[in-house]
Amino acid sequence: MICVITSSSHFETWLAAFLTLAVFSFLYRDNPFYKFAEHLFVGVSAAYWMVLGFWSTLWPNAVVPLFPDAALVVGATPPAQRDLIILVPVILGLMMLLKMVPRYASWGNYTTAFIIGTTAGYSLVRYLRSDFIYQLGSIIKSVIPESANIGLPEVFNSIFILLATISALYYFLRIRTNKRSANFISRCGLLVLMTAFGVSFGSAVMGRVTLLVDRLYFLFSDWMGIL
Amino acid sequence: MKRNLAQVVLSTVALLIVLSAFLPDTDGGFSGIVKSADSYFPIWFSIIAVFAFVLGASSLIGSHVRKIKDRETDWQYSVVTVLSFAIVLIVGLAKLGGASGLEGDVSDPASVLGRIFSSVLSPLHATLFSLLAFYMASAAFRSFRIRSLETTVLLVSASIIIIGRLPFASKLFSFLPDALQWLRPDKLSLWMLLVPNTAGQRAVLITVSLGVIAVALKYILGMSRDMFGGQK
Image (tube, rainbow over all chains, first blue to last red; front, side, top):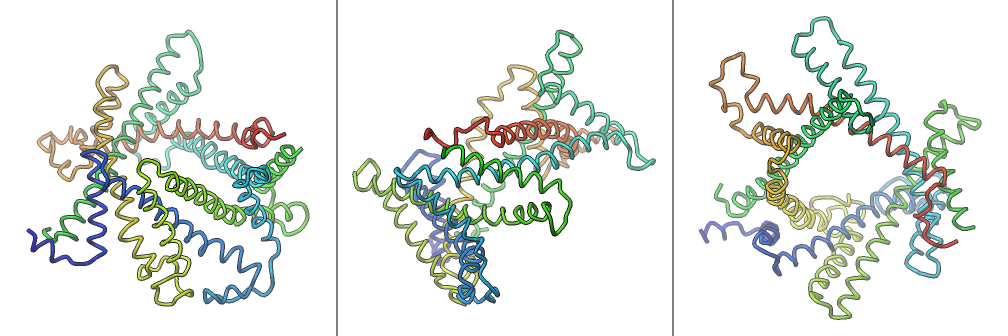
């Protein structure tokens, strides 16, 4: 076994295997190996995403428009002229950094306002268009057959989706009434939602199991070489 | 005063974006100004996001450095976080190890940063998420006990989906006659995914969208200013 293990001498594979086992050791209980892996993950991922943000967003979108010759550093063609409008987000970004200085922290509110404003604006448009209107459109479309040659199962599924959606909406929107029929519809809606949540849960479990199998495959194949 | 000015910024930006979605595509006039402002906002947002990363990282490193200074419990692990952060930052900003130096792609798999990604970040990320498989199973055991019709439906639908995705799912119940073949877990799980799940998710999406629209309007109209803190 040791011979098999030592045959895989690649440092990076060994490092990845050590970290994988360190994280799995948490299944026994919290221990120094897991804590090491956890803290390493925090430090490495914070720096990794910062570096990626710097080179793929800040450099081409802020540094190069303000200093065109900066494009030469990454082997790109410099733009013809400066784009000073980019100073606006740069100043907003610097104002956000003032949040670290308690005395000037309130200056960061303008950046917060811009972030919430753009998020609220885009969310309003996106959810109105692609979720609310599109989903309502899909409900209407489900009762209009796309072709004349559809079978009984398709008709059943369309009617089921329509009724199930209406009953789930009925439950969600909490239409209060004392009528028995209304309570029945609401209860059906709850069962539809429970089925959908069950499907989501099952899919999530299978997704995690796939990741687990992938890690075990890595250990037994790439690291130990026994698969 | 400052809070009012921040609210004006928030409402103006949001209204420009909403207006831009409904105005026709023209180069000049009011519509043109709104459209050009809207075209800048995503880039501005991503630039500010990088500054937000800097703010977040400063806070993270600040708290760990404080922990090391004060020799708090488990301070040794904070050294790991600070050191790994500093090393990856230097290596990444200098684009070390790549074939073309600074001109190369930052995520080049041959660079030191690319190798750190494949040997440290990717395995840790995948393993941490795969751990959830165990915890989800124990959580399911505790919460899915058959106590009511709703929990039974949840348990049955989740079980069908899990069994239906197994490699040998098509072999289970293969003895059933043709008329009842739809009861096979693989077929049943597909039907549940496409029919009841579609209905449930559609209802969720519609109600979530109503909620998001209401919250967005609340912020745009200045009915909630908690995010600006307590300063007047």
